[in-house]
Image 1 (cartoon, rainbow, N blue to C red):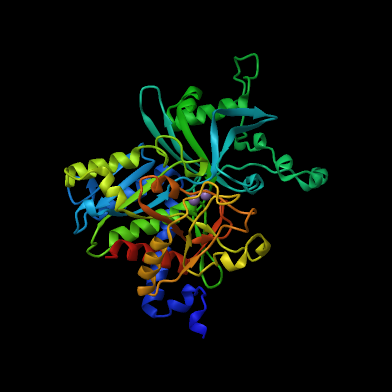
Image 2 (cartoon, rainbow, N blue to C red):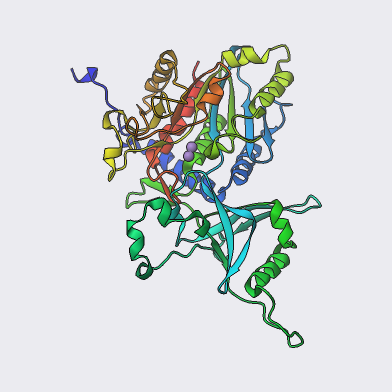
Length: 459
Ligand code: MN
Ligand code: MN
């Protein structure tokens, strides 16, 4: 009677062949390159565009394969299928942004001979994880004459890195009794930028005011030609420095920053590029701002997606009404899930949780406190999707994020559902999600890419 019981399977059990093993390793290696090179929403989109160009895609919808981007932070990609758009598209969404420390608009300060940048954290992060580690600065500085200067400092072996000093244990005994939020004050997340003062010239009477900050401004001016005011129109993000790495003796895990949700960006892109002869038009929408509620012009609650679909329809099949495309569309909301943490199993309800290495995790609903704020996918759609994956023996699992009234969270699924399309959350489960060193399972990366590809190729 065993075949009557339900259980998820591990990817390692399913992918035993030398061919699968080689493909799995190659995919993980290329993924490591992508997330090591792309640590901001802009870099994630630039990385997508570079791969699209290589595959023969062009900007706009003048050909069968095109894209449209917004502010370099969000992007829509489309590839024609055999059937008309009126029969709907196959869509995968994901988000390009990740939790990090944004520099404030007036960031520079000097205290007791140390030059720092003040930050305002972005997204849900545990503040203590950001102290005492090497950080890199990524982003852009825009001058008042409209020039955009890209910044990436702290990644090359020859670059300096930055950091936030943590208090020594000798001076922090008393902090043990404080709550986490009191012990780690957001206004103390100040990134050290420099230490060398500008020295008094022989003809000068007084030391310059803030000599370390002045020296930092001199160096920024030499490197980028900017003044302190230019930082007001900058978006500089402090992110963990250095590349993603394999973790474990068996190299079965990828560790690195920003896997939520660039793992779905990457696997969905690979699936779109490699899908064979798709029946329906295949589309990707990668949004920004998911980690702070999906607002803003590049977030999922904006009209960007709709405008892109309208432009695509105008170019390919101008008679087709937008609503007709939407009502016939099937979508996967690609976002990461929480894998059962080996040391915190009590936070999960184990019958309905995602296990590391057991393939792509579906989430029928997200939300919290009684499914509040959830999409709650229709069972007819989940049944169809199960069939698509089982036909190809792709490992998948159905999961909730934590115990009822313990866990919860939101994704962009509800923004897609608002158009009337069928949508369900589907993505790999991570350990250490939202930390500076998130972990993904190599078989899950492979299974997710194959699941997305099966979705695009489904009749
Ligand atoms: Mn996410
Ligand atoms: Mn997240």
